[in-house]
Length: 497
Ligand SMILES: Cc1ncc(COP(=O)(O)OP(=O)(O)O)c(N)n1
Ligand SMILES: Cc1ncsc1CCOP(=O)(O)O
Ligand SMILES: [Mg+2]
Image: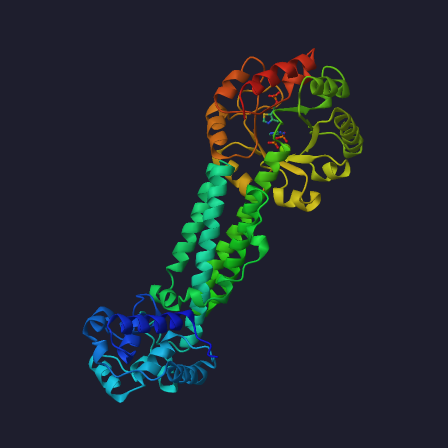
């Protein structure tokens, strides 16, 4: 049994077909050469072009029917195998070794091919590493004439397969961000990563990749695990393809180093970008689910409530508020933590979410559902260190750039504002309704518009694209927080998400 590549098998079958079609009676050496040169991107064709021989010219000039009858194919296989063992330490021979065996099968045939510009020696001279060649300068366009030719071609084969795999995975993720998440920013991010891959691939001489391509020889193409056909949901598709993208990038990075540190570094940067994307894509999907029905978010400060905080909270929850934030800016920690624990208990009873403002440590100690962070507060990354992967992290934003950064940082939801002047907090800059429009169009992450929002202006905010709002004074200073919450919630639920 000979270990050949599918390329060789195709060439053998192709030579037989040619002989049969020509009514030649026997397969001739020329039939093998023409069959080996049939694929423009195959090794033999690339090799000939590399030594300056025009493949179309050979196809036109070689009179296969007039070339010597080929020996039994087993003889050619033996010669190719011996060549491959001698030069590649590999009994599994490729089309280039088979071509050399065919050329060596007859002196007369060798002479006619030499007249067309190629001899086995010329082909070997660019395939085999020799002491004398190693000292020669390597030209920029050189494909095979490199100090370790088979090593580079083998590395290129991995790169070729991995570039394709990474590009395919990126395409799936782009579709997921675009059609499932409906997220403009993440779609753009994945597209940029895909373009980054294409740019990295261009750092290789194009023919190195082409020369390495023998996909059918890849034993992995038929090795399919049953799990490859199982996808529970679009989110599962995204997770599987994120892993595929990262694995391909790791492989690209490692084998890319064979071509120098520059390519390795470029690919490493792309791999880190893929990790960032993973965070944004998977967190985005999870937060959308957990906050799917959350429309009305209420910030409570004890001193600003006209009645008690617990009564205000219960009333507002009865009126339809979905999320409560404890926002105590100057309260001593000894007072804050017990209050936070009380609010945790009240929100649990009411069946609503509870977020602590500014303080991941307090959020963790009182077992809150999450924390809210402003641009000057602790970062999302550090908050995750305190809270772990599950609790919700909200981030305040005042510009589209901050929205994008919050998405990449792994925020679960975003506060967008201030929209209007607020009695709760003083501002000197108002990104206003234009920002509501821009932010809601940019991301599919849950966004809560806030700042001076109440019953009299909520329609404008909704008209600008907001589907969720966060309010403070509108609830904490209301005589009837239940009714106040109902009015806001009714306006919000009027517009579907
Ligand atoms: C839901 C929500 N959005 C924005 C803010 C504002 O947070 P930040 O900018 O950190 O300001 P302070 O509230 O900490 O003064 C928020 N608290 N909640
Ligand atoms: C904390 C904060 N950050 C931006 S606006 C705001 C206060 C929102 O309160 P109100 O609804 O009373 O304006
Ligand atoms: Mg803050």
